[in-house]
Image (cartoon, rainbow, N blue to C red; front, side, top):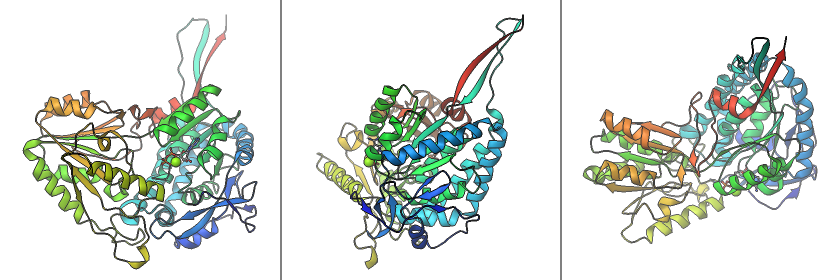
Length: 513
Ligand code: ADP
Ligand code: MG
């Protein structure tokens, strides 16, 4: 990614082909998609003609360009969305749902190409991460496609001579601002419910990952009417800012950092529009001395998202382990992560890929340095660096398991968004619960125990939006996902998320007296 925009004379508005053939060469696909927004059913360059580079983090080579979105582009996209929404919102909800489900089927045919493209631009390993993401995207559309019939209101027994009811109406144009870590999936969990609910959407992709989501958009536009789904690429203040500020955008759904979430919430407050904010986390994992140790270690590897270079807001980045089993847990965890293969994201053998951007790479290194400087801290560095000469400039970081850190250290308080976790010993359950809840964040939490009473008590006391016992799953379609405290506002991924966040309720009284 290169923040300096340049002009590309080659990109001209390109109508969508009638049928898209999956393209398994991600380099060719990246080039074909270079330099475009997707507005009103058409791939078109930025109004200014400017673009920015898309860089593969594994090689640091430029693999494509993205259109450099600014206010002028936002104006065109929002106008298209506003126009298209009028007809879209009048269709029956089940018909919209059927089209969204059809999008899911089309996406399922493109899983492999989407996986390869997102692996190229984000550095996420194909086998362990990118292919999983692409499948979940198709599944999210399938899930929401079936929910058209759930857009129901209530009847209210207000007065026998009146019919009193509530109805759910679309908001209109919804803005969505998404991050780079799981770009296609996080976009899907916003736009699938927004569309079924009758809204049109304008999405801004993350500057680090604009291409795979553009391909998703192209596939959606094989099914959806033009203008219902619009996608812009660009940077935060230049392209995201104007979306939130636009007078015709009625709601913004955002996933990203706490600081940006607050900027967006302030801008939304100025316009009195609702926001959904999925922000950061510092998720605790409590391992009791009666836990199944092997399962807990597997859960720690999965929960920390080492295969995603730890680039997850849900990452189990604070592990509280009972002192009796602390050392054994650390040994086994280290041994497991040590065996993981770091390398070319597109290689099937690779478990761990590259960090998304130089900024993020430096941030992770800085936090590792801060952790190492703490008194008593020990950094266990795992896995070998890739040996392939083509990857010598790649943004690879060896996963780090810290021991001996305190919960009030910066590494344990601040979100790193990298392959860095801290394992801390505790002596009593009460102490563990206190430490787990002593955080500004409250996204996810897990407890590992074979004692049912302890498990139940922990689910009630852990301050987090997503609490798991003896597992560390990712977001699941149908289950509300979203944080408390500084981790955000609102829920995603469920039927209620569609109803609560993408519709507005109207009360209707018909006087028949
Ligand atoms: P990260 O630290 O991973 O870049 P951000 O919160 O900065 O996380 O980015 C998440 C998304 O928010 C990206 O699409 C980014 O472009 C966008 N963004 C960043 N700053 C702003 C802003 N001031 N207004 C609107 N969107 C923004
Ligand atoms: Mg940013």
